[in-house]
Image (cartoon, rainbow, N blue to C red; front, side, top):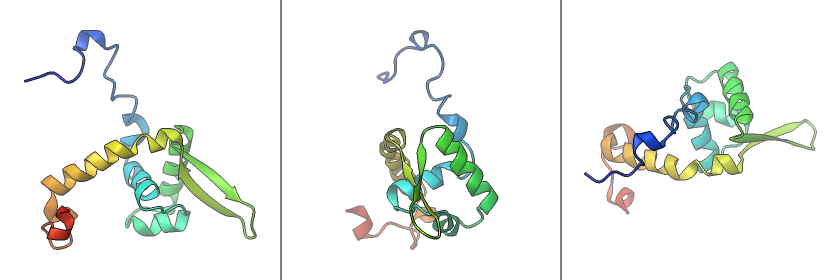
Length: 125
């Protein structure tokens, strides 16, 4: 089998390890997916799209993702104050591998991913 990464002796450590810090936490990838692919940018809409996610946990994850430079918070000049969340360039760089995770899930977990438990002809296009 062809090796796709450099031999281990050339790497200082496992390259994926730093990325798993905040991204490996519950809800983090789903929040990034909602903002990046579904254009959900408001706190209450993010909360509504993730059943089981509590306001406290959402607030915590948004702050962590902001601290890691994946998201940024933009306060709109309006009354009442309105806050939207968006991906930073670092967050945008995550979208291709997030799409690969989506493809992987659709292929290997179709009964969970698709409403009818199988992809339809329209889904395959």
